[in-house]
Image (cartoon, rainbow, N blue to C red; front, top):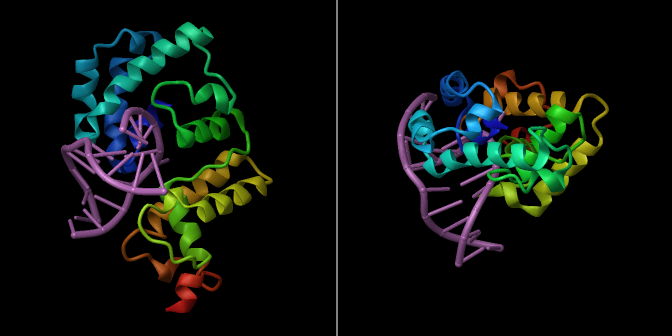
Length: 182
DNA sequence: TTCCTGCCCT
DNA sequence: AGGGCCGGAA
């Protein structure tokens, strides 16, 4: 959950050192619940979107008081945690509880948009057709859902990149409608 | 310039 | 449904 808070609209490579710094200072949920928000804010400053800093402490306090420090395992409960939205809830369900949760982030949306040749632009994450494709994809997963999740995200971040996608090393180029069209 | 493993508020 | 947030890397 901590990692996903930091990864919102933020590149994974930038998150790594900040994540380490935060966990060094607040190694468990109890210490995080007592954190000084100004101190948290200072640690995550390089990531921007500073309003996120309050979420770490609030989420920790909430989980301690409502669930005796145990992260809940249903989407409904997860969404009530401060700072947790559809995406973070889905990741927690998939990664921590091995559930086939529909997950749509900008990486997954980009891959689906290109592969299926949907030609959508802008904030495609909230497009209904994209969400339906993602739901369908995860519902058909026959392995650990988190493996599918990480595979798509890593593929997207490393090969199916936002600018100048690396078609030359893409194993899906023969089936990809974006590539076929070119 | 563009975009990043979104959430929150209106 | 849509806009704001934000630093930083490519």
